[in-house]
Length: 311
Image 1 (cartoon, rainbow, N blue to C red):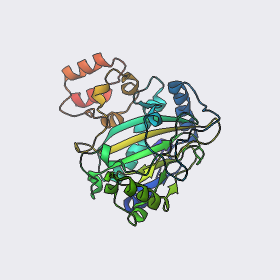
Image 2 (cartoon, rainbow, N blue to C red; image 1 turned 90 degrees about the vertical axis):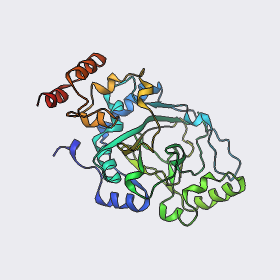
Image 3 (tube, helix red, strand yellow; image 1 turned 180 degrees about the vertical axis):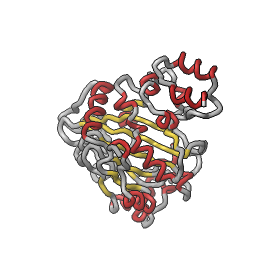
């Protein structure tokens, strides 16, 4: 079995995920894969270095806040670059972990973003938060199949000086508060919550090729870049069980003007299925729909779909 097809996580990783809702997945990507993705980041964002001075807007002794400048250097898939970055969010290793974590054979990618951070561009320090509020209209489920998994992938070496994600495990956060505590808007309550969570904070600092997988009830936060001229390249891939309409973020169809041919021309049927494209053998595919799809994406190799139609 080739490196591309090997599982790149262990049973122990999955057990930790089941217990804590968060796990560091080491060596998820090869050095060659990381280098190719970094080259695409350089092309998409047009730079590979930050400033020599950090930006810090916080009051002394406090954890930061959200503001728009933190999210300026985010681009959603697809990108004007090679297949390396366009398909990294549906890499077989990510699909395999998502299927195992969500206990399903069919997953859907509902968020795929390349996120570049540069020292001095923003104060990236955030408060601890849980992602359920903007991934679902309800709350996190206790059933793994009805939750989602975010896999946040590093393609540069990330130290605490390069904005490593910090997080609190479920075991530790249970000593403080459930994720719904983030809904409380009282400033004094939130300040106390942040102080109590900080006691249990862990750093996800790790080399390129590492990912942190977490679900929407896990407290986590972004931290500031302090390394002179520093930068951090990361990709956020969010998966849910296919067909679960209660979870969502990006409507891929809404972004139809982006260069989707860069995805369709290089992706496998399994990778396209993560975007909601019907797999070979699905009743959607007929001679007519195949011809129309070929007209839309002339470079798409529809052989697997045609073979199942003919069979």
